[in-house]
Amino acid sequence: MNYPTFPTRFRPFSGILDQFFSNIDQIQGSDEHFGLAPRVNITENGDGFKLEMQAPGYDKEDLKLNLENDVLTISAEKEHEELKENERYTRREFSQSSFSRSFRLPQTVDAEKISAEHVNGVLKVSIPKKVEVKPATKQINIG
Image (tube, rainbow, N blue to C red; front, side, top):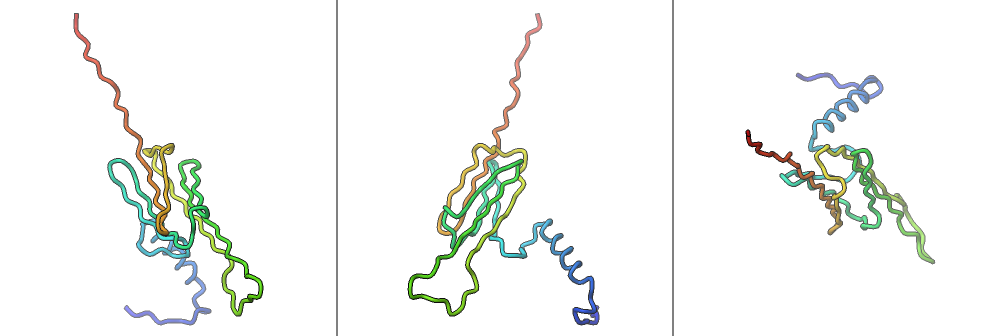
């Protein structure tokens, strides 16, 4: 069905609807990610989870990982270099870049064993699951 198009000034609720539906996509795990946050892949196997985040242009010193109340937050902030003597900008559109992404971890992870490495512009975070301890069973003889 074709709906007539109206100029933006005649669609007062279009921004609200766009925001509502974009949030639904994020909750459901849509492949489209709106905004400037780095892209993330998360895989799971029997031993745990592997999170890989694209972080080109960031050194490992720029990246910070924080775990608080079962929420893993990955953030970065990078200041861009100042000009050298006898240099001047003819155009400058950026001076700093930053991001922050948070992930709620399930109760099954072993937070003490989370590890991370930065390889070729990709941050790789290993999130192992807790080893499930099964209660010991004991055979009792009837006397």
